[in-house]
Image (cartoon, rainbow, N blue to C red):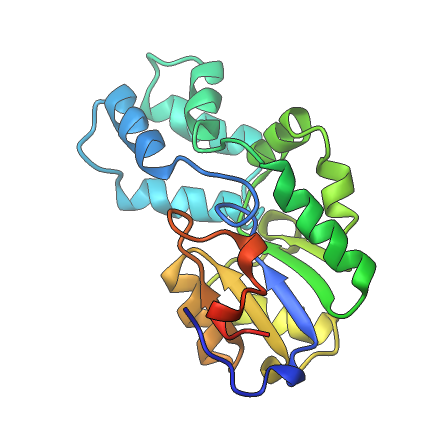
Length: 211
């Protein structure tokens, strides 16, 4: 639950994608991947490569070459399947929610996601209404396309500057605490949504004291 005393100042809603609109299976995906890699945990180098890929600083071929070099017993298709296994379903009621918000034209609608080419390709191929969803936003920022990633201050500054917004005029919704803290440090209002107990379509519920 979050409380905003001066909600009338909110001019823009900034949404994360995964676990806000698109359901993710983070725990199972990590468990299955570690089992396939025969590892107990991911190395710092692997995390670093993943982050570079999310920022578009590595191509998909370079990303896959790195993992194939580490795990030569696996095929490229298996690496891709493991990487995309985190992605689940996109409930249609969330599409209707953002479409209705777009029709109301009360807020500037912005999507801000840490993602990558393989994940977006999967979404395009498996979510039939992806284009409709994307077109509901005024601006749609994907980390690998803009070369920035959450929770770095630079990505929030980029969004604010590109949209001529002040931090105090924005509400940012994300399921990752680290990202929420990054936005909060910028002065942006936040909602750290819990995907297990909360749904983005309840954003305007009175109990949340948001609007």
